[in-house]
Image (cartoon, rainbow over all chains, first blue to last red; front, side):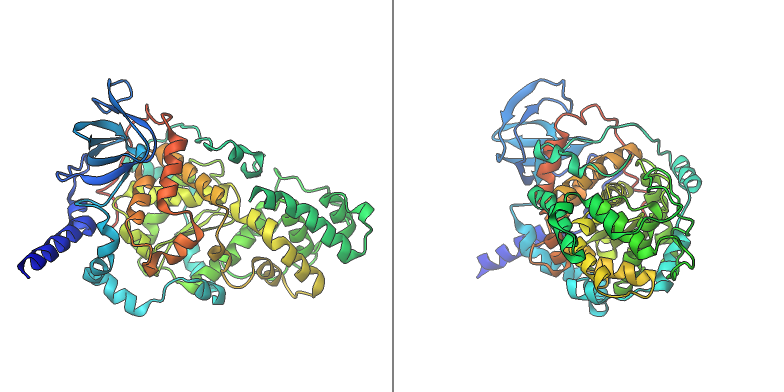
Length: 192
Length: 317
């Protein structure tokens, strides 16, 4: 009985860690959110484990797609992981990060977590979900569309916002589709 | 899906031919069929995709009625434009407006001016990084706890309050909006209408007299806002993810914000009702992340670190 209770406690604690928003919001703007336990994660593709968060850093070892790793921290495009006794950095997109604090707890505890969010509980009672039936039955709401139009901004206002926020536009080409078939012109849009 | 996409046009052409009693010898190309179907307007040159010619207002926020004297009936214009794959910006906006109005009929805007203005600032800035910076872009947060986001032709972009609550910073908001902007600039929904709704729409056009333009548009998009529940080709979703990521980075934000949102959504139980439509209409988050991972490869290695915009991020009460 005691063992079961302790087990439940750990489960609940894991749930709070995994899904609770406060710890993540508390992480500063420095991007390097330390995760001491390490989140159970999996390699999404073959990639090199490196000694530093840079493509020019030396390679510790090659990690294969599907390998289990634990994510310790992330920094920009790189993430620090522990994998089979070794540790180092891989590209953040090479890893699918699991929920913090354990294996695939996220799904298990989701229901309990949502119930703890007071704002959500209130809203669930009043607002129906956007399912197919609701969308299909929807009728045109001119008043809402007019309201929406009132919030629309021009180019100059957006540029003003960006300048005040210190956001600078930069050039970066679109990423080509990795599949050769999808490179077909049929999905390339109609732009002249 | 590719096969499907390529096979629709001939079928359409044949159906049209059959409906009009044109012999198979004339059913060679869609353009020929359209020429037979639609009497050419007396003094109008063929539609140029680059030069908008129609004098109608693009995005009047009320439901417009049919313009009075026109050389070509709106329904014929729309039909021709859609089947030919070159709707004018005005027609595109008209279709988007109808879809947006219907979607807002299903879920109204969250009553929070600060939120809506904030989302428009971020969204408009991200849209400026696209190749259609001067569309009449509209952004809105709609009042439902579902996790989802929607786009409609002509620059309409919505995300749900449920999804907004999952976001941790402004970069993640930019990433979500960037994905939807990707759908708009690549005209994914117009293509969906053109490909799969085309036959049904054609039947509607030929079969009955429709009173005004809004009826024509509604007939095209089906019932209410069901078009947003139908889902796009998964390649279109992957493409929108790639575009969303790049637009986020171009706008000066952390490029990895959209993948972070996908990872976060991936932690929601698949059985949770709040994601049932999202997962039904999109590839699963893990597949989308895998696709992004492959697409990015080492192409983003030298990317300067962008802003997360955590302090600016407007948090819902």
